[in-house]
Image 1 (cartoon, rainbow, N blue to C red):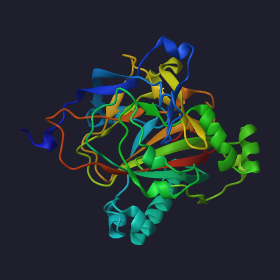
Image 2 (image 1 turned 90 degrees about the vertical axis):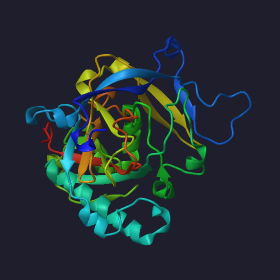
Image 3 (image 1 turned 135 degrees about the vertical axis):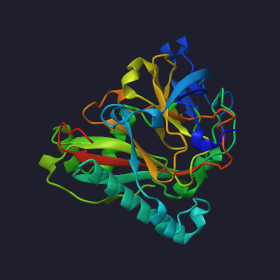
Image 4 (image 1 turned 30 degrees about the vertical axis):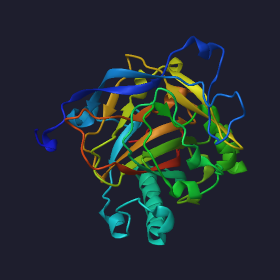
Length: 351
């Protein structure tokens, strides 16, 4: 077999797990119930998945500089951030995070540093990390019906911090992290009354951004500019703790996704309901991945944008996927994912 450094080819073809296109969504809303015990006769979910074979996924490393993805255009971007400084603090592994105070301190330092990096890179006036997770790849097959790990969320609430220190597996269904309505509801408790008023008056742009793989509920704010200058966003950030050899992430170019391609789904927990989204297959979708992603490479992608507050397609569809056997490595993926709010000036294009 050729050395991994020489692989993979510019485009690979892999199966991706989508929610099935079904006429029942015209009369039913998709749902999943994430509680341990169900009332008699109640189905845990009405969601059905369609495993679509041979989906083409382009390797980002094969693209010329002018076609490298950007947050404003494709909805996601690769950022360089050396991980060695955090390894020195003891964050070389996410194992046993919930029982190691040293790792907890290192994680707090990491989250603060990466939030500041996001704010500075995109010329933000303020950035807040409001959620994080740690994930580890576990060998599994694609699900035809949802597999719901109720033990992981039992007795948890949206504000409970302890669940974020538990390692959860990678998600192998093509999804968005939440619907526009869900994020707008979140902003009611994430923003103070003045920030909510300023957002309604469009005095700033707010985006939700995710660092692809990290998420904890941390209400720290690094810098505040005058509200009249602010424009804000929700983001996600995802970073592997070890080089990715199994279960990498695929990202879909937001320009290739139609509003009708999304199906909203209610995820029902013990005492709250959140509205998420699954993606239906469309041959026009353009998928990308970063081969052999290292711990120094972080992926940031958009989740919600105040300048497109009602658009499901403003959020980036993403999923873990199984590599072809000749590309699959041996080291399980470990990763940290963060969700952040980023305020920028109105109609400000990020770099």
